[in-house]
Amino acid sequence: MPKQTFFNLPEQKRQNLMKAAEEEFARVPLYEASISNIIKVAGIPRGSFYQYFEGKEDVYFYLLAEETKTRKTEFIQKLKKYDGDIIEAITELYYDFLVYLPDDQEKNFLKNALLNVTHKIENVFTSMFDGTHSTGYMDDIINLIDKKRLNIESDHEIFHIMQIIIAVAFRNFVEKFSRELSDQEAIENFKIEMNLLKNGLYRK
Image 1 (cartoon, one colour):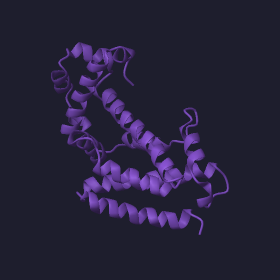
Image 2 (cartoon, helix red, strand yellow):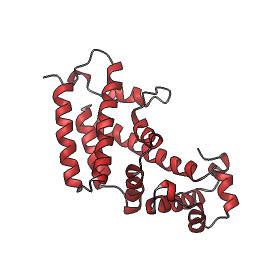
Image 3 (tube, one colour):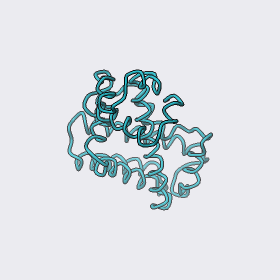
Image 4 (cartoon, one colour):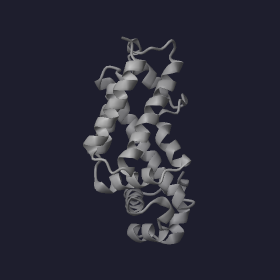
C-alpha cells in the first residue's frame, strides 16, 4: 500500500503519478518497468517517489487493487440490474471488461498483468470474492443474489459458487490475451462455460 504521504498529496498530483505509473506498466510488465520512467513522466524527483511508495511493486499492486475495487462496484450494479442472477451479472461484467475499458492504456496494463501472472497478481484479481465479511462486500452480494435460483443449502455455499465463477472468468481473461482471441471469441467462450455452470448450479 502507498505511504500516508501519498494520500496527503493534492488530488491532481496523485492522479498524475498514477497515470505515469499506469503508462509504464502498460508499456512493459512489472519486472521490466522502470521507476525512472515513472518519475520522468510524473515530473517528480526520485526521492519523492520513495516518500510515497516502497518501490515499483508497491505502486503496481496499488493500481491493480484500485481496478478490483471498480469491478466490485460494477458487479453489485449488475446484480441489481439482473435481479440477483449471478451468471447474467458476471457475464455482462466480463463483456464490459473487454469491450468498454476506458482506454488502450488501461487495457494494456491489465493485459501485461494477465500475460505475466504470478500468484500475487492472481490473488489481487480474485480478491473480488475473497469471502471477507469485514467490509460487508460479500454480505451485500449474498443479500442481492436470488437464492431461489441456486442449488444451495446455505448462504455459505454462495462463497464457493463465487470462487468457481471467478476462477473461470480469470482463466478466460488469461486465455483471451495469451491466445490473442478477439473480444467476440473470448465472450462466446465465456458464455459457453457460464451456461455449463448454470446447468449445474441453478435449479431446474
